[in-house]
Length: 247
Ligand SMILES: Nc1ncnc2c1ncn2[C@@H]1O[C@H](COP(=O)(O)OP(=O)(O)OP(=O)(O)O)[C@@H](O)[C@H]1O
Ligand SMILES: [Mg+2]
Image (cartoon, rainbow, N blue to C red; front, side, top):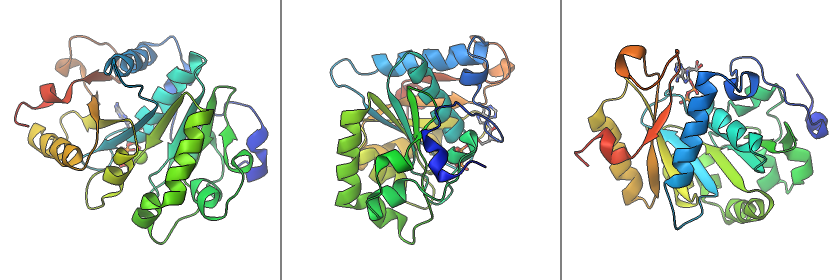
């Protein structure tokens, strides 16, 4: 595993549990789906710039981290300066995709005032990564802190796109807090796993807490579920109202 001071090493390293297909196989059908997702996000708001986008889901394991990594990758491939931040502070995983240590990251930047140059990993010229960093005793309080919000403002000046990987909406309020300081929130929904009712109530909850819902991303769609895509992994973004009309 690379040490923290290797973060200046500008080499895209994708491995392990998270194979970032948009990076490894940019011409594949799957990568094409991620580019479509990116286009859908870009067109989901004509008036407001969606610089900070966070991804959450109703329950664990719906594909947030995989989607965040691939989405950030396709933005960076268009030479858009992109930062992916791991704000799943209770179960951080982003660092695994780059084979870097999680001992320093967002937490140390905010709490210890560690320089961004030391905590941000440059996966490539246009794709930078801020892992969660060492575990914190009070993640929700951290997410509500003024220091974190000030850091987000600083990062907005440095990057064109910031993708935030969040925990699921179950049990903790972290994703709601993050949604408030994000420009747009997308709900990742695993097909055949999460019911429309559950997804709908999560969207309602997020909206009531001030999230700007920009859409839903359906993952794990299988051939029999979708006529419009080919391959094993399918991704698309659609307006969340279409996911459930019961909102
Ligand atoms: N579209 C997909 N189709 C099939 N499998 C997928 C898809 N997206 C992710 N997976 C797999 O599902 C598992 C969970 O994905 P991931 O870690 O991205 O979910 P998550 O929502 O971030 O989970 P957690 O809530 O634990 O953070 C991984 O093993 C991943 O490889
Ligand atoms: Mg995750």
